[in-house]
Length: 358
Image (tube, rainbow, N blue to C red):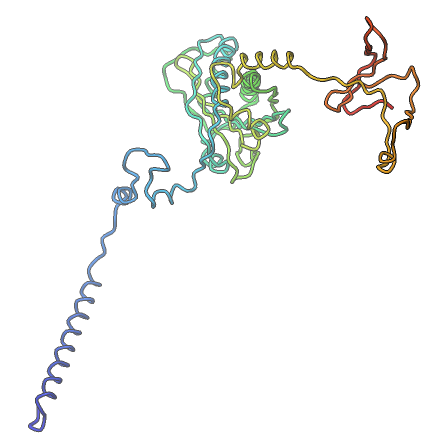
């Protein structure tokens, strides 16, 4: 500080020195914080942050972050009639498999969910048998997957194996011809019962086509397409397993309206009382029936020129038939006559829809 400096200049110099000191302190603090190790969150803390460790909630109740993570899930409309169809399949299949295996068989539904076809194919536990079948009336395909415990259980039962409590050893070897033949027999029985289960809804025949052991050769739909997965569990005393039926939404599209119907009991969306009442009322409805003796097309000028005494000539003979019409629609051909001093007509021919007398 020199003698020539004024008071203001001295004050400015002191303030600049304080700012420099404060800046050095901030830089030193930042460098110190960068040297400190960063703490990494563990998996439980990440799940807690995203909300995955709590109770199961619906998609609408999820938070924003969790909803974004779950956006890949498929949420399609519920098909009430499809649930009824598979309930019937459980009852029918329990009876038919008892006759097939001569054993006590219990069939139950594990789950019915919607998912993407590609996600399901990537989650199939191997080894397994993938049976491809065709819905003939719908002209599309479906997939049935039988897991390894189910395969070994049905082979053991059909070949007369004894009941045991030890866990069966699942081998990684390819399936033999005998095993494939017996599993195809089981698949054919399941498909026959599935066709019977659809009878109250529509007539459809599920025909077995082929069996694959590699999921890559059983791709019946695109990976991004939605499908319905029905998982059923089969228990035969100490033995059993699971099989899954996959129906793409494209396969069910021809009967989508039928599967969306609400139902009561076994009526499947139909009310027989109202149907009978409507049919009876329609039969009692009064309608007018017109007997058309002849028709003549005229110009407007000719109509305006008509006067008392004018004659209109119809190109008809006395014995030509007349048309009976209801609401302008020709229904019958008839002959004119006289009955009890009244003009009458006698129906001789029924006209098809859209057909008129020439």
